[in-house]
Length: 216
Image 1: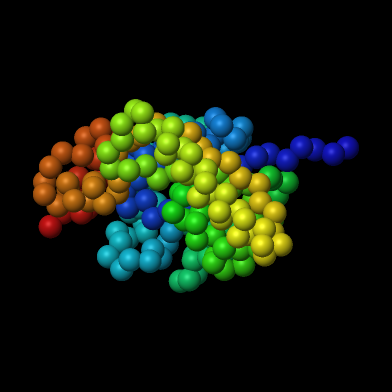
Image 2: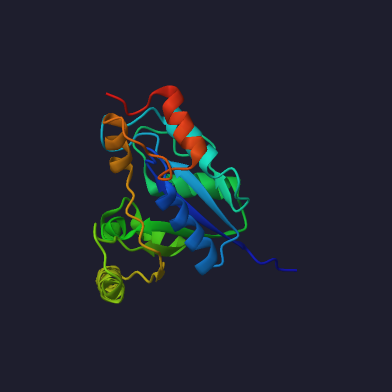
């Protein structure tokens, strides 16, 4: 007897800190791609040097997703080498979750760099790609359709580049409400001692306050 494979999404990121925008993307992926689960993977060694300690970022994600049974955080042992590669994350997760059909949730800016990812040929073949469009700082309602079209065209350009390498890719764009929240905005507000209430889950806000993260 053959068993159907569960569809599971991978959402990686620095999450410094995690905020409602991240949660909306993950929820859209569950709903629009019919995922059973999203596994969150905080990057242990982000590209920029001044990132908050991994343990703090891991704990904040754990708190943010605690009330959603479709969300799960990856063990801290996943992709714990100093050079974090997406392919290693996938290999580690495949060991922990066999019989799984994988989807990779990624922002449009990262998707545009996919042809340059380390061992991207294997990643493209193994995963469905769920692309979250990057929206401008200001957005009028009548612009949303044009932005969706522009995102579609950018994705198609990347798909063509991959096809020129002999790669076939399964992908779709996620449809998201505009939420003008970013981790950098939250860090800036904290440095200026301004409120971040309603920008992050309350448990995350209290954790940031308790540990005095992002303060001057």
